[in-house]
Amino acid sequence: MPARGHFTPELFRFINDLKKHNDRAWFEANKPRYEQHVKAPLLAFIGDFGGKLPRFAPSYLADPRPVGGSMFRIYRDTRFAKDKSPYKTHASAHFRHQLATKNVHAPGFYLHLEPGASLCGVGMWHPEPEPLKLIRDRIVAKPKEWKAVREAFEIEGDTLKRPPAGYDAAHPFIDDLKRKDFITSVSFKDAEVTRADFLERFTEACQELAPLNRFLVQAVGLKW
Image 1 (tube, rainbow, N blue to C red):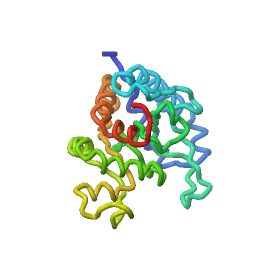
Image 2: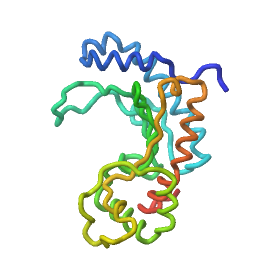
Image 3: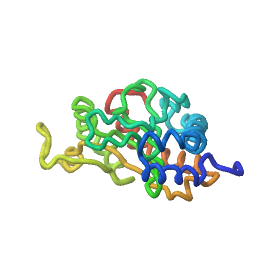
Image 4: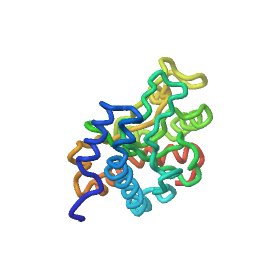
């Protein structure tokens, strides 16, 4: 195990300060802090995680490029938002299937770093109607497989108030057929993120939650 991890408490200090001063002038004045304590270690983490993915998700990618890779930009898209704050107050990365690298809604692994709210997320958030129907159809066609996934951990996200059209309201998994999201997560304390073994801890969490992604990948016709 290395003597130091990828992230230090300075990552969380920067984000806390950004929450208090979310404007361009402050960010530009503090950009060296962002580059040193957020961007650089996150890109290094992504690169190192790429060596772990083949263990349990061989069709997934960890791309450490600073633009167009796994790391999400710190800049918010405020074009249609009421909140015009220019910067996200977290750091994050999304690890996508190699055949769906441009589709953020494909099943994926997600890293979210935020003071008091860091997590590993897995699954599909707000899938489009076509993949959503494929997932529902696979739940109906493979109830034993879905039961094994369902009993392993809690599925999170939004749901419909009524059963979707075309599905039996008395189906034993009707509550899951009503889902609009298929996601689950593991939370991390700030101290865990800054430990030397956080890469292994994140890898273990992804591996633990991978059965959900496997079910979803197979539902939408991708290779696991």
